[in-house]
Amino acid sequence: AFMGSRFTSAAPEYTLTVFIGLFLIAIGISFLVNGIRKNVKYIESKINFRVLRNHKLLSITVFGFIVGLISGFSGIGGSGMVAILLIFVLGYGIHTAIGTSLFMMFFIAGSGALSHMFNNELLFDAALIAGGAAATGAVFGGVFANNIDEDKLGGFIGAVVLLSGALMLIKAFVNI
Image 1: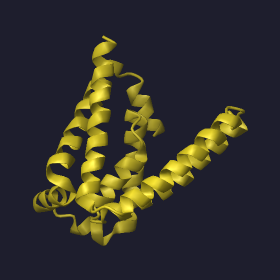
Image 2 (image 1 turned 90 degrees about the horizontal axis):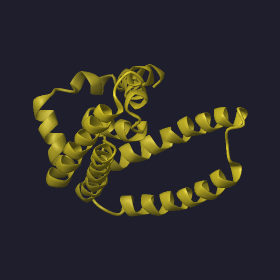
Image 3 (image 1 turned 120 degrees about the horizontal axis):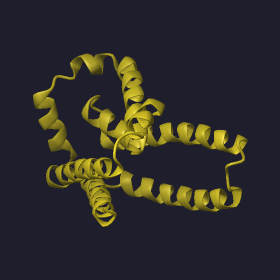
Image 4 (image 1 turned 180 degrees about the horizontal axis):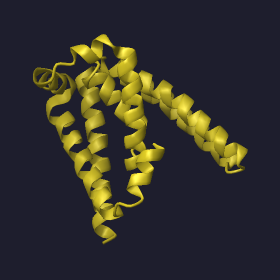
């Protein structure tokens, strides 16, 4: 993430915002139109992931580094990218990928929060209130996600990703 953030400091903000917005819109539309399974089957028909799937520990380590680099570059959360890699490259189901990426973020966010706490850069009141509300929302979101099939969940995720991309483009064009 550190190396990626060094690169973006030299790139124009407008260009990054438009690029990331268009990328998110394309992914969102694909999830909405095709669902998860059809996207996975299409990608698997074009790329043979057997070597990566046979060496999952190495693959996850390398992808973790790449996700950190991209996250530092783009500002897009690593959890979503890890979920996409777990689904499309390593062949896990969407429910397992989401659970794994959320568990991973527990450690990443926790270590980042500790670092900021040691530098007195933490608003405990706000963190406790927002964190409690977010944890409650996450429990309800997890129950919701576990009670719908993968394609419907993929469509919902696609809508959220599409909306995020559209908002980024609006931000880019409004701030011209």
